[in-house]
Image (cartoon, rainbow, N blue to C red; front, side):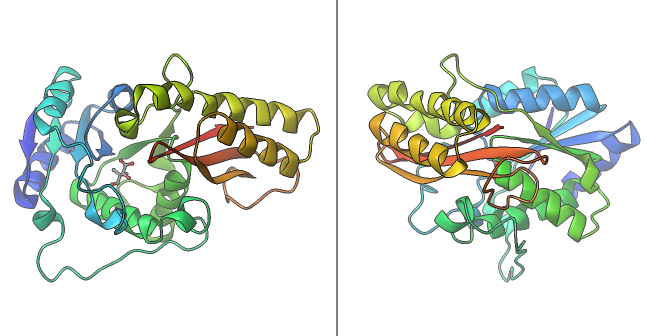
Length: 282
Ligand code: PAF
C-alpha cells in the first residue's frame, strides 16, 4: 500500500492504478472500525484497486462539536488498510486540502435541510465540499459510503448528479448497509466515547426503532409511532432526541403515512454527551 499526502504524488499514483483497472474510493475520517472495513471489502469485490482517504474534515464540524477530540490513529488505521489489500492511502493535512486563500464552498439545497442539517448548520456544506474535492483528486470509477449516514449519502448523490461529475458518476455512488454490533447498535467511531452504562443503554436505540417500524406497518399513524419512539429513547437512557422521523427514502421529504415509495426511519439522539444517529428501511 502506497501512502501519499500531497496532490501531485496522488495524481501519479492514481494514474498508475487506473491504468490497471477500475479504481474504487472509500472516503473516511479514520478511526477505522468494522463498518469501514466492510466498505473496503465491498470495494475490493467491485474494483481492481481500492483507495482510502483519511481526512478529519474541519469544515464539517460546528464550532461546538468534537473536532478536537475526534480520534486520530493514522498508524493503526494504516495497518488495518494494508491488511485489507488497499492499494492507496490518501492522507492529506488540512493545509493541503484547504491551502491559504481557499474560498470555495459547495452547498446542496433540499436534502441537506432538516434532520442533521437542522441540528448541525453547515455540516453538509462541509461534507459536500470535501467529498467533491476528494472525487476530483482521486477520480475514482466508483465510491462507497455507509448507509448509516443516510442523509449524507443523499447529499453526495445529489451533488454528484447536479455537478455532472464524471468520476465517479452519480450511479457509481454505492451505499453499503450499516454494520451493527451484536446488540444491534450501529457501528460508529463515536461509540468509543460512551461509558459502559451508556453503551449498554444505547442498544435501546435500534430496538425502539424496530418497534416503531413494526407499529407503523401495523397501521399506527407515523406521528404516534414517532412519539412512542421518542418516549422509548428518553426512557431508555437517552437525554434528548434531535429527531425521530419517517421520511421518503430518496427525497427525504417528511411522510404523513406510508405509501408506495420506499420510506426510511431516521433518528439522532444524545446519550451521555454523545450524539448517535441511525436509520432503517421501513
Ligand atoms: O462519513 C464520513 O466519514 C465523512 O463525512 C466523509 C464522507 C469522509 C467526508 O469527510
